[in-house]
Length: 118
Length: 231
Image (cartoon, rainbow over all chains, first blue to last red; front, side, top):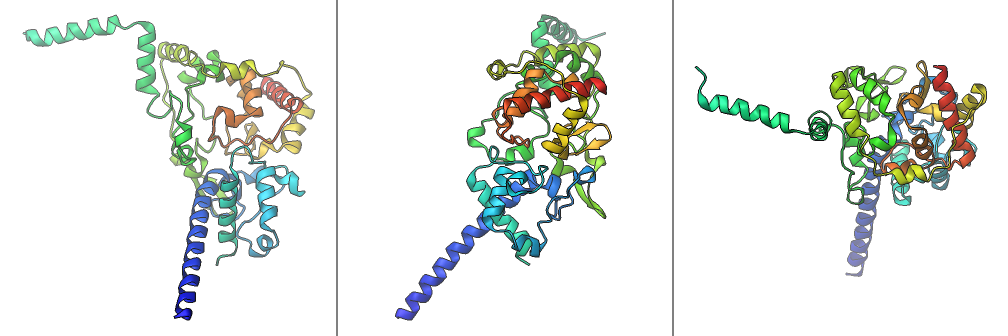
């Protein structure tokens, strides 16, 4: 009986966790389409419509090794405060006036999905 | 012989048209020609999400009188030229290509053209839409000059505006409105105010704020002037 209860509790927690992650990433996907695809590409590969005249190419968000080397905190800082805040290009603007903290978290959840959930 | 009822209908209709005042005719024109794509009233942003931005067909016009130069509006409405190379919502007009995403030009809608009389009428009506005069009054921007070279470096290298905006017909990003005609198109104080705080004008804007101080906004606004006059 005790084993069954523990299993039930673990299943419930897993279900809640998976559900909230999925919801965040789905919201992040919508935000990504609206705010990010112009530069990072509709497939997240860093090849958006704006790149032909860019001096520094946008990050390829599907590059698993590059994206795995970035912590969530780094990604959040880059999104909120722009490329300059993480010693990268000024071509990446600061989005903290446009996006709430929750929306930035949603975007990071989506980035983790397209980079590494293969 | 024309039936009496038809004749009555024609006379009534003619009298009805004649009875419309110029401002009523202008309002009717905006409703008939503009409102299907452009918002003429403010969105209820408190109860909408950013999906609202993805679903917009065209820029909101409810603050047109705080934004545009009337003389530009009159000319442009008669002979519209594309301001946004990738349309108003770029993701809807983007397709993947072998070397990266490209704009699907065939999917971009053409803007209607108005007669000279209707353009005058529409412009006059649009210029009356001024809910944000307080934002313009709050701007501390005096039109000035900057060397083109310095302004260009400031626009591109130092602030990265060229990632999304073209400052020449053949250079810059495609997702934002082109800015080589911005000075002809927009009121100077609107330019400064919008660069400073775009979200205050449009909570769902795709324009980031970038924490620019007054001096930086002054330089960017002056560059749009100098560059625009150069074009």
